[in-house]
Length: 211
Image (tube, rainbow, N blue to C red; front, side, top):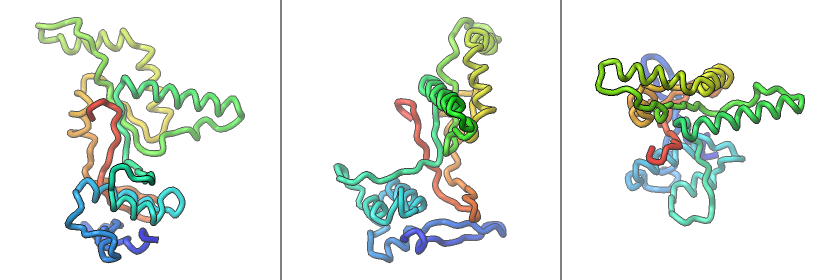
């Protein structure tokens, strides 16, 4: 597979990391690396790194390199993480909770239902303005938000403790875009997939209309 031929290692501070080199694809005659837009380089690396001969194949890598709109073949994309905000994230959590209930009703282990990649839920659309023009307005508005929506926050606390790969950023920390850029985005991610550390570009799918 192309993935095996593209695997390289780099050592940083005495720690060895694996990465997947696009230069090997260029040497195989698939494209001219200098002519690819940066976004497509990230996309091609993603497909190459996730190549398994089943979900992602050599043909998918070759198709990703072409990046033509209107293509007849779908190409798998595996984001590093998912970013949710409260309007769309809470319903997604309810779906996961319902799936756990269904597992339990069928005599299966409900704890098996988890996000397969890291998910961050930023609560940034909920706080109402009950107080303004006074120094303590912000803290009072937050206090009223937790009182007004106690059931929601009890559910979110349960979800954060129950699901793997899931975190909640509570209200008052900033809007989702700011929180993502300042705290969550890694630019370069490092994961251990069971065979050593792999380094790769951070990619995110967001559910907000303009994330």
